[in-house]
Image (cartoon, rainbow, N blue to C red):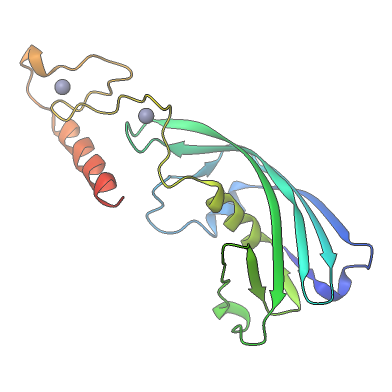
Length: 183
Ligand SMILES: [Zn+2]
Ligand SMILES: [Zn+2]
């Protein structure tokens, strides 16, 4: 989905649409640490306004995201209610088309080619920015037992029962270790 700047009237333009999993897939990075899935399309409202030296886009993105807890690896639903407020600045130095890479600073300025706003990319970026570095299914998630791999939110540790460690438990631990070490 694209919006051409010269098609935005002086009074602004509002877009309301649903944005779904198929669109998200095009932007999810390989090895996405969240295992992000849109369980159903998110609702997006974007209000485009032209100003002499920039385009301002306000609105919000609402919905729910399926993610993987970084501590217990359980799936859970994260509610999304993200306000959008972006200044898009035309930058002649920005590379054109496919090579274009949006640059962002603390003030939520983004650069674009001055002609076309790539709306799908913008929505995907806003969703990823809304995610914390580490997502937890709850603040007091107990995680996995490092000995037996039990999900301590759901079951008791089996270490003391003297049971052998299952290969699956070890696999889970390796995955957890990887996640922790990339933080
Ligand atoms: Zn958890
Ligand atoms: Zn255990």
